[in-house]
Image (cartoon, rainbow, N blue to C red; front, side, top):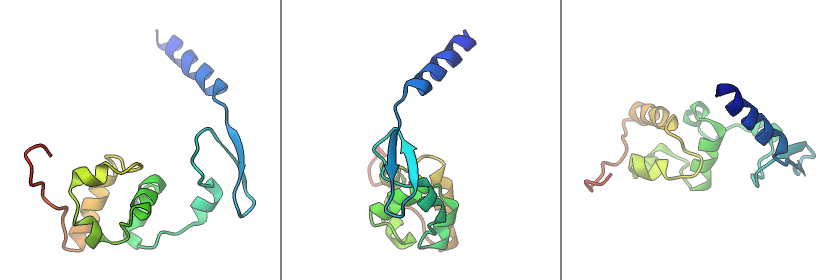
Length: 115
């Protein structure tokens, strides 16, 4: 049963069409999604804040693209609100909590029983 699952994923990976893309810096890369981020440029890019270095690139981009360029701005949100951002996964929360704690901040507490 396990081999069939492995074969199915290998077939799916082989049939996934990857599009050739070129970034403004001239790097050629292939992506199967619409994501416009060049992996070469992304590796060279440094985040604006040191606390962002602990986060994966998709989480950093999610925060930056939504205007969360400071821990004070993040502290105005609940954990659930941050998790709702595309690119933020559960592994980012402990890293964000640690950075907030080091700055003497915390996530906003939920005011609803549903969060």
